[in-house]
Length: 284
Image (cartoon, rainbow, N blue to C red):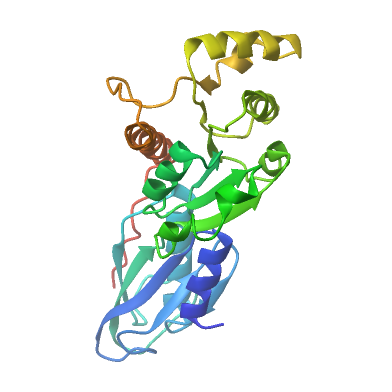
């Protein structure tokens, strides 16, 4: 598999990786400037020259993966018999600068249950983001290709589910999925809330509706065994504070902004406790 095929494969699988490029060469080196390889958590693809050069690059790339780094860095290695090498000698006599770029191949997953007026307006906004976007509805007509045509060509990877029992799709979503529940039927909403609370590995769970609706749902969910701590996982009403319009477009904008806040907070928490380790210093 070439480095480019590896990038595509990691992107399709939603797995992290680092692209390593020979950025500059002084003197003699195993590979020319522009040579590339990809480093994953357990595999590598293509080559930037083998030996200590490549082993050091792989080690550093995996350190970046382990701490969730998102910014690129440069790594300069000297290929002389006097260099402090950890993985054997390379006596080409040159110096190689590598560019290590963490790939944006891991996408968050968002799910919209109910693709009515608000759901479709929300999908059109979220479809512009680099996410995995699941659209689920029990009504086939809401998912007709002509109705979703505006979502084609966006940054999101779209997954459309016609599901007479929507909570069955919820059970199949990956851990960490952030979801909003806004179906046409309060019975469906209640069933989805129940199913979501039975999955502690989900992310944000938002429910559209009034305080009166939530009072009734709390009673129903409590009656089937959910605790106060469980119920606190559901955010309702949804949307950022201070926006009071009730048109589908306004509600969708407010909810989309809230979800972006959720995504940014999740990204911050992933990296705040894993500082990027310093790059190794290589001297002759």
